[in-house]
Amino acid sequence: MTVSVQTDAAGGEALRPHAEHAFADELKALAAADDRPRPARWKLSPWAVSTYLLGGTLPDGTLITPKYVGPRRLVEVAVTTLATDRALLLLGVPGTAKTWVSEHLAAAVSGDSTLLVQGTAGTPEEAVRYGWNYAQLLAQGPSREALVPSPVMRAMAEGMTARVEELTRIPADVQDALITILSEKTLPVPELGQEVQAVRGFNLVATANDRDRGVNELSSALRRRFNTVVLPLPATPEAEVDIVSRRVAQIGRSLDLPPAPDGMTEIRRVVTVFRELRDGITTDGRTKLKSPSGTLSTAEAISVVTGGLALAAHFGDGVLRPGDVAAGIRGAVVRDPTADRVVWQEYVETVVRERDGWKDFYRACREAAE
Ligand SMILES: Nc1ncnc2c1ncn2[C@@H]1O[C@H](COP(=O)(O)OP(=O)(O)O)[C@@H](O)[C@H]1O
Ligand SMILES: [Mg+2]
Image (cartoon, rainbow, N blue to C red; front, side, top):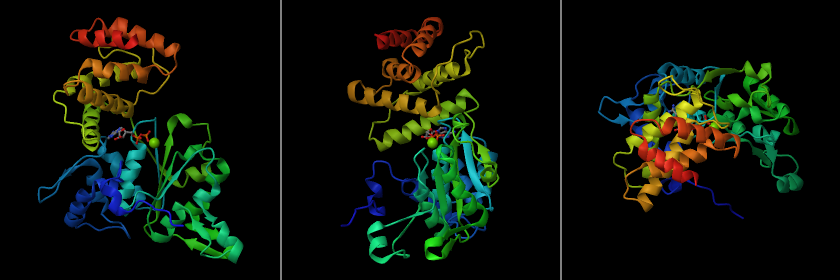
């Protein structure tokens, strides 16, 4: 039996193409313009990887779109770490682009973001080390052919970037398997009396959620193998509006939504509501607010606006209006049906209702609550 896997050719029609396909043109232009030294097996120099992430203009005028909007130094530290013998841990609250940055780093450094282990409470050791093809194992005994390498093992053998998502959700004994890999740069296979040694170019990017702290705390032995970079929430409302509008435009294009004129008013509104509730205080500093139970991350703001655009495109006149985002905002805020509903109602009646220019939005919130 052959299993059909997605090949490069499917990249164009994939619902969500990998970064290395979606931004193939930018990566190619960067590689062509890049005359700085590249670490072993890197597709680009650290400078070009940073430019890919942060955006810029190449000498020939090619525009590189920013993927990550945030402090430049932070990206430079992350990229440089991958060229050292320490692995990279991206830490932050949900929705701070940890997964997004990890994918783009792997795409730019190794040209492949798919050597990925998804961390859950049920992640087995085979996902980090290797498993066996049992039919072959029974027929022939342990052999190189019967061995099924994990994405980490493949990255080691080929000198590529491996990714581990949600590292702290992985059970402690499975996490421990990473210690040898990261400190000795080798993965023993005792069944074969062999080992797989990491070749130059191998490194690993892990992500972990700040809020998971205590779920499976990283052992200090493992933590020492990582350089930790904390991804912050956007520092200012303007930065957050910029992130949301860029990502919404990209996602809208991939969903074939027509570009929305004047969507900025509603994007600003969503960002304002999210930031005020997250911070527990209004922008003018005058009114203290209760914060809802969920994280109102930038990622959620992006999905509220994208959802609103789809409503406007399919059921409205294509212009994003308060009524298109009100229900989405409410849905993001009210996670816990009792406590959060009170938080939201208070916010609507004390802040939204009184604010200049927010009458339409107030009406839309009232309607969305019914
Ligand atoms: N600072 C930022 N710059 C660019 N995109 C961001 C930023 N913060 C959040 N995003 C967007 O939020 C979305 C979700 O991010 P994700 O990587 O899934 O978050 P995390 O893994 O930290 O929970 C992505 O589409 C990403 O583009
Ligand atoms: Mg993530």
